[in-house]
Structures are given as C-alpha cells and as structure tokens.
Length: 267
Image (cartoon, rainbow, N blue to C red; front, side, top):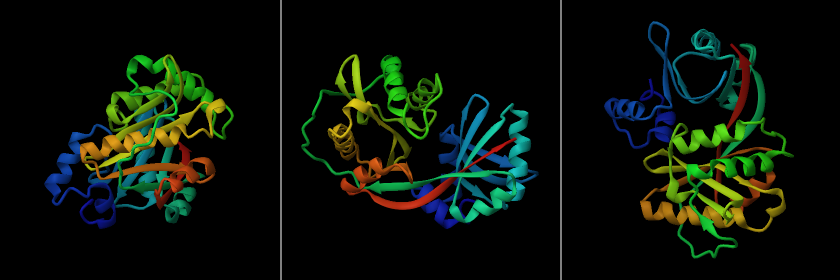
C-alpha cells in the first residue's frame, strides 16, 4: 500500500527502498498504527491523549467514507470518543460528508540545517524531564491568550509525550530552553521523525519575553546540533493563522511546503 503511493513513501519513508525496509521502519516506531478490515486499509501515525486521538500521515487504500467508518468502529472499542484527523485539503469534502468538521489549516516548513555562531541572549540549556513542572507552567502561560489555550494538565501531558518519545524520538541535545533555572522563559523541543529528519515539536515563549530573538537563537542552536549529528532536514508544522511563527521561520530561510487540515469528529 505504501509502496504504491509513491508521494507518501518519498516524503515519509524516503530512506526505505523496499517493502521489507518499510515494514522495519513501521515496527521500530510505536506511533504507527495499521488499520484492517479483513485486509489492511490504512497506515497512519496515532497519538492518544485520554479519550482523544490524533491521526496524522494517513496512507489509505480506501476513501474517506469507508475509512471513517472503520476508524470509528476500531476506536470505539478502545474507549476513544474524540478524533482529530490531519488530511490533505483535497480530502476535506469527503471527511465532511462522513461527519467530521474542518478546522485550522497547518503548513509544513522545512530547510536544511546550517551551523551558525549566533550568541545566546539568555543562558541556554538542554531541558530534562526533571524540569517538566517548570516547562509545563511556561507552556500553559505561553498559550493562555492564544487562539488555542490549554486546559489544566494538558501542557504537562503533551510535554511528557514529547520527552518520553511518544511523538518520535526526543532529541535532548538539540532541544533548548532559555532562562536562568528554574525561571525558564522560552523553549524549543525537537523530535526525530525519521533518521534524516528532525521536527520542531513545540516552540513557545513567555508573553513578556517575546520579540527578543529567543526562539531564533534556540532554533539556531538546534540546527548546530543537527548538523553535528548528520541530520539533513528540520521541519515545523505551523497553523495558517500563526503569523508570528510563520514570519520567524521564513526569516530563517525555512520554505513552505504541503499543508493539512485538521478534521474533528466523534466515534
């Protein structure tokens, strides 16, 4: 199924040249899920948070109607009530007809990491799980007045997923926080999507410390580590309405690529 969809394989499993290599890549990551209905009908990445699930990087051999029905049957048995799907804009009508509501458009930005000698504005450090409470408080404050404020406990749960590897291998030496411990004011956390590609999974700054270049320095420091590790691509997914991060990434020579729309529904 994956080998037949060349565009999906080239972007998601570019290092794999055969069905055996794809299979090994799927098995090596706990986030991939195979959905079957007598025979395999879809492969996707799945992240679970309580009664909710987010499904991304979908490769399916059936249309939205059949896939939606199969997903609901599968997830209902697992006590999942809320579903978020990340689908291509061309598939929105099909999922809307299947009971999903379209949400925000997300854009993919990427570039080849480049080393630099950018000087830190505040002390930089690699965050560890010991700092999870401080990071969670910072993240909750950073999102408080945004279009998507976080519920109590959501920040800690999301950060725990990142640092535990549930969202892809956590790249601890390429993730950075700014500030004098324990007073952290900005963070950039990276995960490994595949051997040659890292992703900026979270980027957030305390409202009182924005527009000072902290995120720019953190991303630059992350790229220095990625270059040293031989990782050839760094990516970030950004909401279409997040003009601040879009401007930042464009200024840092990231290029905009494909887009996905978040669809939400119930089981």
